[in-house]
Amino acid sequence: MSEPLYFDHNATAPPAPGVPEALAAALRDGWGNPSSRHGWGRRAREALERARGEVAASLGATAAQVVFTSGGSEADALAIRGPVAAGAVATLVVGALEHPAVLGTARAVARERGLRLIEVPVDAAGRVTPAALERALEGAERPLVSVMAAHNVTGVLNDLVALGAVAQRAGALFHTDAVQAYGKIPLDFAALPCAMLSVSAHKIGGPPGVGALLAREEVPLAPYCGGGGQERGRRQGTEPLPAAVAFGTAARAVAARLGCARAVARRRDRFEERLARAVDGVRFAGRDADRLPNTSAVLVRGADGAAVVAACDERGLAVSAGSACHGAGGGSAGAILGAAAPGSAGEWGLVRVSAGPDTTDAEIDEAVVRLAEAIGEVRSREDGRWR
Ligand SMILES: Cc1ncc(COP(=O)(O)O)c(C=O)c1O
Image 1: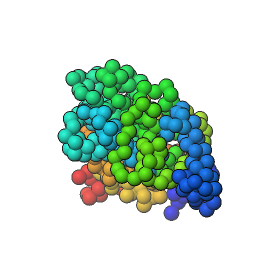
Image 2: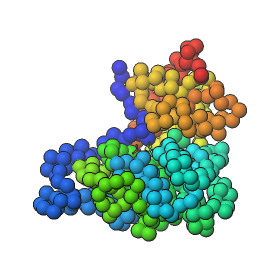
Image 3: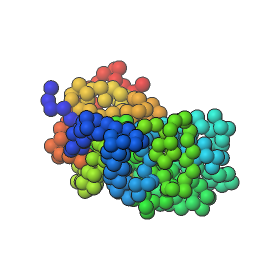
Image 4: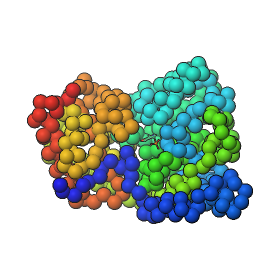
């Protein structure tokens, strides 16, 4: 098979330079428990606090605002469950196209606690508009708002500044899931109008299994599961020290990743132009909206997204149908299709193509060739048609 091409950075990014070494070294030499009161513990604590500072610096936050979690999903869960457990929330207000880590948690918590849940409808590009949020918040009691910074499938950005202003006027706690935005667009927690922000290490070349919730000091985050008083009592369980240290290493490289954003966007545009020339009946969801520089949500007429992904895999091209966590074509993919190709749902498949900071023009051109071939093959097969 020809050289494999990885275009699934939104699922997981390959390790950033130094990350495997940092992970191995921390596991081998720095494995103490940060809560222990002896040399091993002190050294572990120092390494953990260094990593906390590195993560904070990559996000314009202070170290005290960083709560380490097991990843983006737990950071989202903590952002919702923590304030609810503290009794600070009576209404949950979430975007209709949020990641299941937010939507699923909000629905479960609303059911468990008998809270009011409002799922705010999105516009044709999949965004929560300030006007829609304002309407949702009318008369809402003690609201917590969660709207993602960038969509994981389309890369479309929400206007956090405008949404934050609306949330603030309504006295809402405002959380943003910035898991996909992290390392792709600048995020400055000090300047953003949100009280909480979620990130995950494996989206920026850190290891999976570690992430962070940034939370301003005044945010009430009560424990929602049993355990020790780690992370200043805001998150229970022994900290994942080796993973956190490696997260810190990846966080140090965020500035360099952001420095590539313009070149990454130019390559994304090159990909879309070439694919549209090579294949009839393709569109790009969210193309006219502000979006992440690396992400193309390709809508393909007359071909099932999952079948195209399988045909790409046979050609050594790694892409995904919708998103890795939603499964093929399900969840938000269906909603995105409905919004981006109205009236034709059922005829369009969705393939997400997400590049990295080091992707080259030559790889882009080769990806177009393989994807075009894959679409052609699927369209020619009876069983590959949209189902
Ligand atoms: C927007 C968004 N939120 C949350 C998550 C979950 O993050 P993790 O895989 O670290 O649990 C993802 C993962 O794809 C995501 O894209």
